[in-house]
Every structure is written in structure tokens, then in C-alpha cells.
Length: 370
Ligand code: IPM
Ligand code: MG
Image (tube, rainbow, N blue to C red; front, side):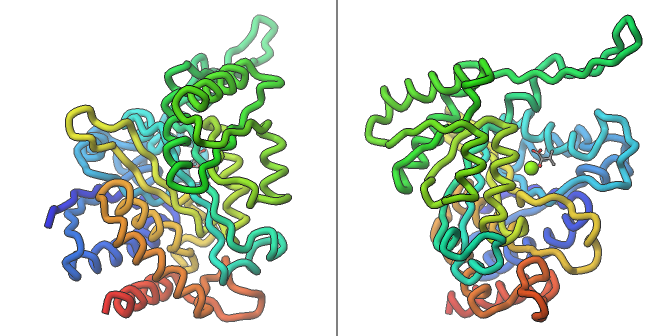
């Protein structure tokens, strides 16, 4: 049995609590002899800033680079509101994405049947939903230069962020979108703002070209990003794979999260290009939700997005698709029994703790594997 080397970065807020439950799941797969994991744990975000004055240290970056995959919790919180911009907790996550070259961010939004009533949308709109937001993760306005605040001669200030995309960056994310669509319902919706932004015009042209030349069998449609946000709350089941830039993906994936009942439900995978010699991709797995400082340390957090992120690691980094299916099934079954953390519980009904939810999923895994 191959052993996989995982770097755990719990981070801040609810990060350590949900990572605790993810560890339980990894241990279970180890004990069962399904896969073996060697883990190392390090600091990121505010926790790292407190320890060394940086949102991520050089040693931790090195560990991340050497790991087969990184499991990431969450970063940030009001405690670090005043720290210098370059050392803010989010900078640790952004550096990991950029330096590891994790350009493809997969954010599946699946509405478990048992949770259709937890969504703020009507049951028939979300029931059975299974879409994937593919977000470009290392380009666009997140990283474009110049990015600065300058003082003008008249004393006024001017802030600038730069939205920037090259053909190559668009081509590679488009290919991931088409490849994923082929494994699903064969449809790609490309979202941009070609009516306002030059980067949108290029995005549209490049995606169209890749579709026509390399993936003529996959249905391709273009949608303006604002309209896409509206369509996602109107009738999300029209979509299969939505591909978009970094900023639109950030926003559209939060919208998509609420279709599934709670932001606490959405896992994500961030993948790099395959290594030319080994075919292995660098990868990082994280829940889409943030550090939720308001509920941190109180065992209220929903660990499902973190646990489902472990599932994505099994599937995309370790070739353990069956184990991932088993884990997804365990999560669905636990939800079907009515076990709920506070974020997805119906008003007035009892909610379980973070640890109880983790234990329920482990117990279900145990009975499924029997
Ligand atoms: C996300 C988050 C991050 C982002 C923050 C924490 C920097 O919102 O992963 O969606 O904006 O990308
Ligand atoms: Mg976000």
C-alpha cells in the first residue's frame, strides 16, 4: 500500500476544530488498510503571524512543496485586522496558491436530498443539484500588478488593482473545464464580462477556440458573469461546469454554496499542472467557507466541507475514487438520518457538535465498509 504524505495546515478560527475531524477520517482509512497517510502539521494565517510574523514561513512553504497534497483549514479573523497587508492571514493562502501553481480550483456544489430544505431557495430549485464551479486561481485581479495605493500630487489617494490574463492562462483552465465536463454532463458555461472588460473579451475568444478545436463534442455556452449570478439563484440546474476567472469564481462559488444549504457544505480542490515526468499535480484541499471567528472554539462548526475536501484529495491526488465514493456516501447517509450541525439544522431542532458530526460520519463509514 502506497503511503501518501499530507501537510495539514489547520489555520485560524474553526480551522483546528474541523481539521481534527478530517484527521479522524484519514486515520480511519489508515486503520482499515485502504490507504496510508503520513501527516505533518504546520501553522498558517494568523496563527503563523503570531508565531513568526509571517502568514506562512519559508519552512512551511517547503513542506507544502514536498507534500503529496496539502489539507488546509481556514485563515483570518478580527484579531489580525491591524497587521501589515503583506502579513495578513489571507496572504498565506494566496502564496500557497501562487507558488505551488494551483491554477485550477474545483468547487462542486451538490445539494444532498436531505438538505434541500436547508437552502434559502425553494426545494424544487435546488433538489438534486450537482454543478461544478471551476475557478481560475492564480491570475486575474488577485495577483495582477500594479496593485497599490498611491498618493497623488493633490494629496488625494488612488487605489489600483489590475485584472490581467494571458492566452496561456485561459487555455489551461479552459482545458480543465472541458475535461471535467466530459466526465459529467458534457456542458461548459464560461462566465465573464466581455461587455465591459478586455480580459473578458480575450477569455471569451480563447475558450471558444479551445472548445471548437479540441472539444467539439462538449457543449459550450457563454454567459455574462452578472447574469450567471442571477441564473444561479433562479434555476441552477441548467449548469454543469461553470468556468470563470479568479474574482468571479470567488463570488459565484459563495452563491453556489448557499444553494446546497450552507457554506459549511462546500469542499474544494486546487490543482496545478501535471508534472511532466511523474504526471502528479501539486494540490491543496480546503473548505470554501472561512474561519468563522464568531463560532470558533465552541464546537459549533460544520466539519462536512473539510471532510468532503479529504474526499476530493482521495479522488484527485491519490487515485482512490472508490474510497472517495464511500466517504461521500457516508456523509449523505448521516445527513439522511437527520444529524445536523447548527448551520443546517431546522429551526427549533437539536443540533450536534462538530465532534459529534465527525463521529457520526466515522460510524457510518464503519458500517458501510462492513
Ligand atoms: C476563498 C476565500 C479567499 C479568496 C480569501 C480567504 C482570500 O474567500 O477561497 O474563496 O478570496 O479566494
Ligand atoms: Mg471566497
